Length: 325
Ligand SMILES: Cc1cc2nc3c(=O)[nH]c(=O)nc-3n(C[C@H](O)[C@H](O)[C@H](O)COP(=O)(O)OP(=O)(O)OC[C@H]3O[C@@H](n4cnc5c(N)ncnc54)[C@H](O)[C@@H]3O)c2cc1C
Image (cartoon, rainbow, N blue to C red):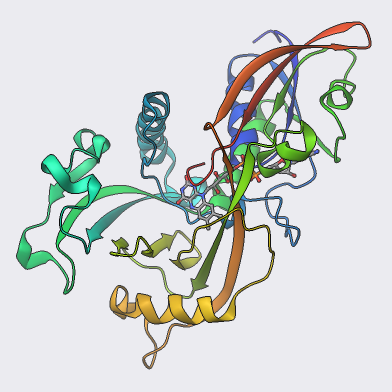
C-alpha cells in the first residue's frame, strides 16, 4: 500500500503500539519513539502497561468508551481465534465477579450496571448455590486474561512487519518528535502518566496499584468486590502465572512496595485461589507496583494544530486511560 503520510507516535505502551499498528494498517508510515519498549524494567514507574493486571472488563460510564471497549472485545475475539493465546498474550478465560454487598450499584435492576453483559460470551447470573461464602451476588462470563508484555511484543512484531521505525529516546517536546523525519506531518502523544510532564496536563494523576505475581496459572479470573470497596482479584496471566491483588491509591506517587499490603493480598486471596497454594502458601514470584495513568475529565483523545518552526503539525493526544488501558 502506498504510504499516505509520516506520523510519529510517542510511547510504546499498549496505547502507543496499538495506535501505531492501526496507522500502519491504514497505510501510513510510522515511527515510534519511546523511552521504554516491551520487556524493559522500569523502576521509575513511568511505563505502566507491563504492570497491568490484566483483563478486559468495561468499567467506564462514558458511552464513547463503552463503544471502544465493545470494539476491542470483538476484535480480540477474532484475533485470538485466528492466532491463539501463545502468539498474542490474550487468552479467553472463564471469569467470576462477586459482590459482598446486597444491592451493590452494578447489580441493581438485573445487573444493569454491567452494560456489557449482552455481548460478552457465556454471561450468566450465578444461582445462590454457586456463590462462595460471604458474597451476596455473582456473575460468570468469559473474557480475556492478558499478559501485557506478550501482547505488546505481538503488537510490536506486527508493526515491524509493516515497516515501523523505532527510536529509543526521551523527547522533551512534541516539536522534537516531529524532527524524527523531514516528512513528518503528525505526532500522536501516547505518553501515559508522563503526559503530565510532556504537555503540562495537570489533570493527569496516578492511581497506584500493587499486585503480587505467583507461580501456577489459574484457569479462571475471580474478583470479589468487598463492602469496603476493596477488590480481591485473581487474574490468570497467560504463560506466566497468576496475578493477585489489587490496590487503587489515587494521587499516590510513591514508588515503594508496601510489604504489609503484599501480606494482606496473599492472605485475602487464599479463599479465592486455593488450588494455587503449596503447603498452604502461594509460591510468590514478586510483588509489583504500577501507576494507572488516570485523568480528571477522562481519556484525552483530541486533535490540535501546532506551529513548529513555521511548519503546521497535526497533534493527536491519546492518553489518560487510567485503570482500563
Ligand atoms: C495494577 C494495575 C492493574 C491494571 N489492570 C488493568 C486491567 O486489568 N485491564 C486494563 O485494561 N488496564 C489495566 N491497567 C491499566 C493499564 O495498565 C493502563 O491504562 C495502560 O497500560 C496505559 O498504557 P499507556 O500506553 O497509555 O501508558 P504506558 O504503558 O505507561 O506507556 C507510556 C509510554 O510512553 C513513553 N514515554 C513517556 N514519555 C515519553 C517521552 N517524553 N519521550 C519518549 N517516550 C515517552 C514511555 O517510555 C512508554 O513507552 C492496570 C494498571 C495497573 C497499574
